[in-house]
Length: 336
Ligand code: HEM
Image (cartoon, rainbow, N blue to C red; front, side, top):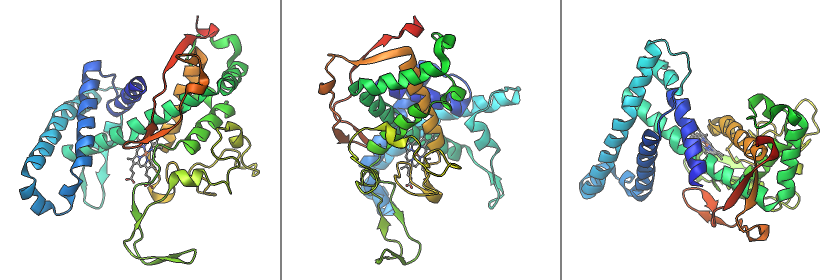
């Protein structure tokens, strides 16, 4: 799992800052992000009465502010280096460029450095563990069900055959692999990393299916239960990617609509205005890693016994594997 997390984190860092960071820098950002995330979970109470809590929980506030300072000390030099590189004519594109250029029209100003740090940090937090955990769920299923792994492999083989010996498959190749996409969607349905969305509320009293939801009441959407609804999905607890092949009878829309804009059958990324802004990126990254993992390596359980792969869940920040996947990888013929 650490390897998956590290790989995703490096990729997100490259997208943020437009340049590969060295391992030491990555580890530093990762460590501070994790510390803040863990600390924030513990100090929720500080939000209740901010003024009062600053006096009562002085020590906790101080620690939190120190962590924020540490975060700025790491991220601001990277943001400044990016601004400088852009000024010197760097042709690569980075997320930080958009944040630096962004004009807040209502307030007639640009983002300040503190805000840029917060937005970069939010994207690391929201994008790393979710994607890495989902990647682990997918690979666990491919190891547990070797026939599904073989189907993914054969689909790639049919597409590129011997033309791409040992090569990496790219974004264009992935568009032609419907079974791969089905595997990713099935994992997102069966093992959503968040069993609930972020809490929502209604801005006015609202009636829904005969129930009145009062203004400002918290609304929690049960994501996992939606994806496991037996009225919508046959044998919902079974891992069956085929259910996403030709999922729509509407030939104008052959692909499954994960955004729920046509019909809501699962909500792993939410739906509507507050849908996860990173959903397309997450799908791309998951497909990219899975396709190359399977093309270059055969994945097997460490002790060779697929029945010992335990798909039980454990609730951490998100829902992770209770017993993380332990796999051995063997180079496929193509990569030798
Ligand atoms: C498998 C991967 C991912 C899953 C399952 C996932 C899921 C979600 C969900 C369920 C929400 C809450 C939506 C709601 O409350 O209605 C959310 C919010 C968010 N996600 Fe993702 N996400 C993933 C990856 C990413 C990535 C890669 C990024 C960015 C790099 C990202 C950025 C965000 C942000 C910034 C929010 C907060 C949006 C807001 O406050 O409105 N997520 N995500």
